[in-house]
Length: 200
Image (cartoon, rainbow, N blue to C red; front, side, top):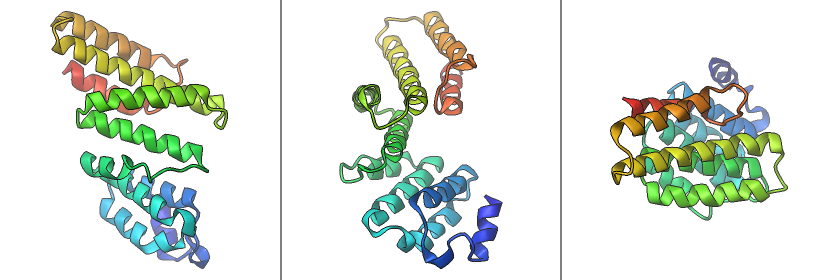
């Protein structure tokens, strides 16, 4: 992130005032992960006009959603992400990442009924798609599978299908699954945090 800041201060990050969507989102993502939210929003306003005209509004909105999510303003992230106009037809990887981020934000706000439907739809897409390589789709499918398990365990506990001991056993089994180094799972760190919260 400090490299990005230094390059931007020297006007070397965006030479010719033109920036690719990938570099734009990577920079904003680094700002969000390092909790430099104000700098991230300033970066978006400073460089959004350097994005390709066709995706300028969509990419800048997606960047804002990354900052909102990491700053725990989950509903603001959802308000941006849950919009059918924010669709990246020509970049399935970005579209996937957008949908995964939406799933995480819905989980954080406990909108479980909506989330369950989104998990089913997106997992079905990842299974059927020919536009993304298996090395990319498998970790994301596994993420959605684990997330769905967490939803089911909480639902079963809420409606008395599981007692507290059974609940903890089920969560422990998910934790063991996450700790398996042979299983490729996207957003593993975030999932481990959610598991720890449930065990607490």
